[in-house]
Image 1 (tube, rainbow, N blue to C red):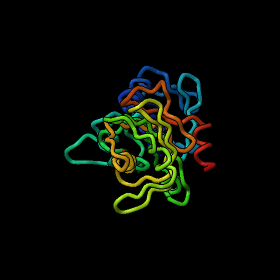
Image 2 (cartoon, protein in one colour):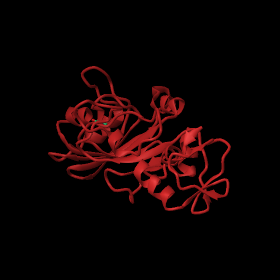
Image 3 (cartoon, rainbow, N blue to C red):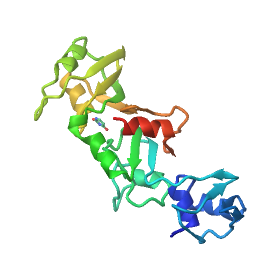
Image 4 (cartoon, helix red, strand yellow):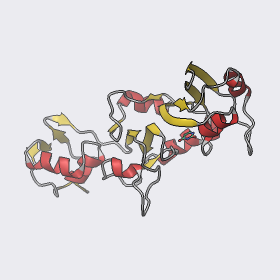
Length: 231
Ligand code: URA
């Protein structure tokens, strides 16, 4: 059994405060009866819960896309700094970021409580492609794309071949299929330019939703969820 407010926020319908307001204002029905008590107990797998007469389906796992802003760290918790977990609704135990973006990196971050899927997406064997927009301090050298494609030698590993599209002298899009620490920044440093802004715009089949403001998140659509699971 689970509390109604916890169930609704865990299903991605809003923060605890928002869903409690929905419940109190009579928008929520359980098995056809309006329930106005946020603490009411339900059985998520059996009871039919509706908001505004639309069924709230129960799913075992939750998958959220966050448009990460700069200045927050990618960690499940931290005693001193704001983390990406502070930007998503509470209510789902075990939800965690899939991989990591640096504190100053922005853009698409997936969070889920589906540990098996997270593991698959992060496994080097799966070569999940990530696309980043990169702004550099100096013009990107003309041979950079060929060097990225050949596999750059970094101090402790050789990066797998990456696709670099230089769109303006100091602006590019890069596609990599690994996720080593500071990888994109280190690859650009290896061709003698510094990354001054980095934004991830896609992760596997997921593309950053252009309607999602920085700092906000939403649950994946069923199509997005399916595409991820098909990887
Ligand atoms: N590469 C980096 O250098 N930083 C990130 O945050 C992601 C990829």
